[in-house]
Length: 169
Image (cartoon, rainbow, N blue to C red; front, side, top):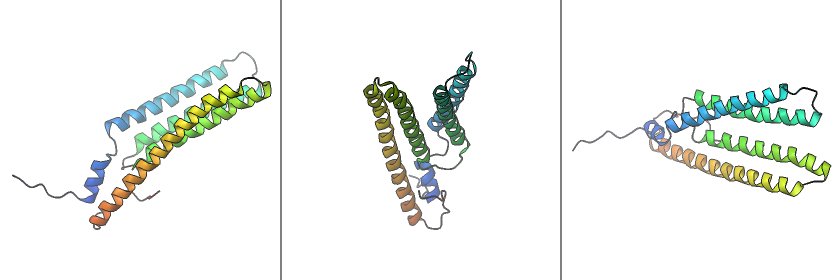
């Protein structure tokens, strides 16, 4: 029976969360391509209108384009990372989803109130999306906290090992 040498804290941390796992690369490429294609689609629709659009419609097109660009930026950022993220990617994705859900719900509620039609369905459906995004944010923060706690434990066990992540947030 052969004995394997004990792993350093850095090696253990890298095993906990590899920097570029296959699943993370797939998520990153999906976010990048979805965001870019969404931006192109919304921009093409916006630019392809035959006449001038009302201000509120232009604001909605801009909002949708910004949301798509946020997802594209997230995907690009995730592809460029070469260090363990300690679930930072999940936290950022959850916050993008929450911001997009809140902004879209608010942007749809304003015309519903002005017209006096159908505010309840807008708030009900928007509320479901906001609630789902909140659940994702809570889970992402909990996962990140658990990984950071484990990294601190491993670093405390092997203090001579260099740290792989400087932020504790």
